[in-house]
Image (cartoon, rainbow, N blue to C red; front, side):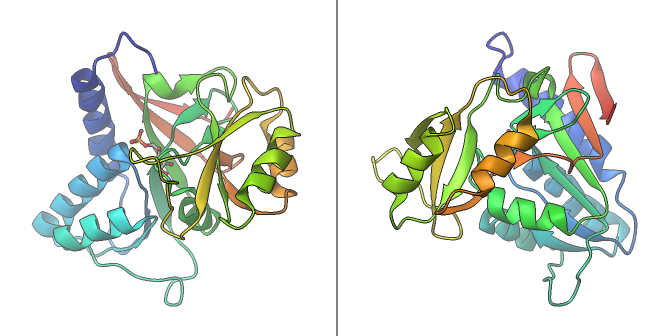
Amino acid sequence: MDKTVDTMEQNRWKQAVAEVAVKIVQDGMVLGLGSGTTAAMYVAELGRRVGRERLRVVGIPTSESTAAQARRLGIPLTTFAKHGVIDLTIDGADEVEIGSLSLIKGHGGALLREKIVATASKRIVIVADTTKIGERLGSRESVPVEVVPFGWEQTLGRLETLGTKAALRLKPDGMPYLTDGGNYIVNCWFGAMTDAREVADAIDHIVGVVEHGLFVGFATEVLVGGADGVKVLSQA
Ligand code: A5P
């Protein structure tokens, strides 16, 4: 993250993006509800629209935390059993590559459900701020990889054969961080990637991997908050 940006300023940028994003939502839509702090600001704005305008939408949450927030705000939730296609998903990202709009996601630990929701979505709008934007994916963030707990040491070792430095994500008490699906996360530092799709394909073939946080070819637009207001990045 850009160390010159303080948290309060960054929060103002995220809030501005959330307010722009919520205007994209239309009555009757099936929505994918993202996870993370920026998505939470958008979900809060969505709750306001549902309350004030009687907006009729249903949401599929990407985490237990987002599900709880939506319930508190009175946003009706649905499931894939009832709705196979999502009209619009608005979600955050940890890193965005200019041009390709490839993403690193999952530092909040919700990458598996986020990718399932993204895959079922007709349109995906990412809410971010300038600290997340870069020329090459991987130059700022590690790639979170969700792995099954059984044999995680083996899986981590196989990930390292791809040329990454990998480490199990731990909680402050030193125990492994657990995802909503009861899996572990291994953070993988690849550095700036010349071909994120190739890296994604390689990770996909590793036994023990459930899913990874490289989202290549998913985002259609990225709303970016910054000192100059909210800008829209589209795929080059
Ligand atoms: C959750 O697992 C992530 O993919 C989030 O979307 C991502 O970490 C962005 O979160 P913030 O908006 O809190 O930075």
